[in-house]
Length: 94
Image 1 (cartoon, rainbow, N blue to C red):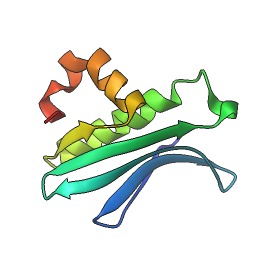
Image 2 (image 1 turned 180 degrees about the vertical axis):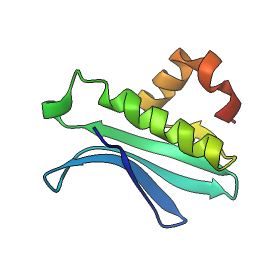
Image 3 (image 1 turned 60 degrees about the horizontal axis):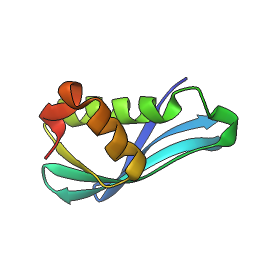
Image 4 (image 1 turned 30 degrees about the vertical axis):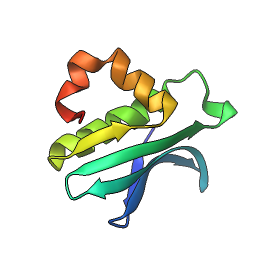
């Protein structure tokens, strides 16, 4: 399953698209030049139970590290994942 990303410099998203239909998405906004805010995560019922939400968070962490960014996970799901994997993801948290 491929995680794609779109970013216009102000807002962005990590998402999964199958047959041109977006089935999972995690959206974020750029808060400062070096900080993003994850504000929403949604996964289609057809993908539930496959760890897609975790994969979206993991893709965001890879992006954060590659671009020397920090994150504020306001989305309840993303926040729970960052707390659960704190020891792995502490370096990207504000």
